[in-house]
Amino acid sequence: MAEGDSYHNPSDDPKYQSGEPPRPDGLGPHIIVSPDTLRDNRVPPGQSRTRKWPVLHASAVPHIPRDKWRLQIRGLVKDPIVWDWDQFAELPRVKVFADFHCVTRWSRLGNVWEGVSIHTVMERAGVLPEAKFVSVTGFDYGWTTNMPLEEFAVDDALLADTHDGEPLSADHGGPCRLIVPRLYAWKSAKWVKAIDFLKEDSPGYWENAGYHNHGDPWTEERFSYPSA
Image (cartoon, rainbow, N blue to C red; front, side):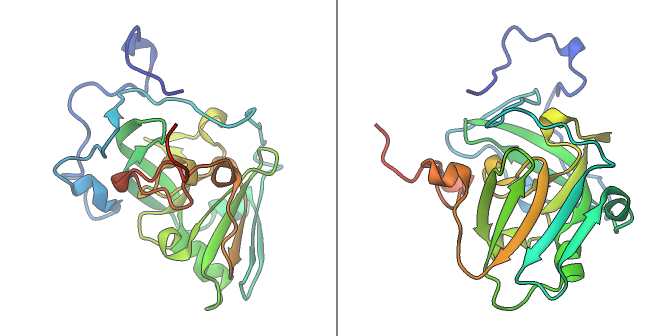
C-alpha cells in the first residue's frame, strides 16, 4: 500500500516537501543530475507526487550496526571485495539529485543522495566483460533483485548512505542502500549486503512474485502478468 498526504501534519515530518518539487537548477557541477529530473513532466504515467517520504518494505526491518556491516562484491570480477564500514567510508564520494518512483504509484521528487558511485564499485572490483547482469542481495532474509548491467552501470546510480543531508535510517535502507533512479524503486535494494555480477539473468524476490523483470516507470513496467 502507498501512503497518501491526507491527515498528515508536516510540522512533525522533517522530510515533508512544501511548495513546488525541488529542481536541479543551481545545484552546481559537483552534483550528478539524474536525467529524468530534467523532464518537463517528472511524474511517470499512473504515478502521483507525494510530499512525504513513505516507508515500504517486503519484510521486517533489519538493524545492522555499522561495525557489523559488510558488503561483498563478487561473481564475474577480477578482484572480489569485502568492505567493512570504515573501508566503504574511505571510498570517493558522489552526490546525486534524482526522483524516486515506487511501483505502488507514488513518486517523491528531488532527492539528494550521497554515497559511492556504482562506477567506483565496478572499477575497484574489475568487472569482467562476460558480466551482463547484476543481482543485489539485502540483509533482509536473502531478499534479492536483478537488472541488466547496462541499467546498473549508469552515472546516477550509487550505493547511498545519506538522503537529503542525513544518514539513512534503518526504515529507509540504512546503513546503505542501492539507488537506481531510472527504474522503479524496488530495484533500489535496501540494506545492501552483496552485489553479484553474472553472465545470465537471475530474477529476484519481487520479480519471481510477478513484478516486471525490468521495471521502467515511464512505460509502466509494473507487473509481468495481465491485470485481473
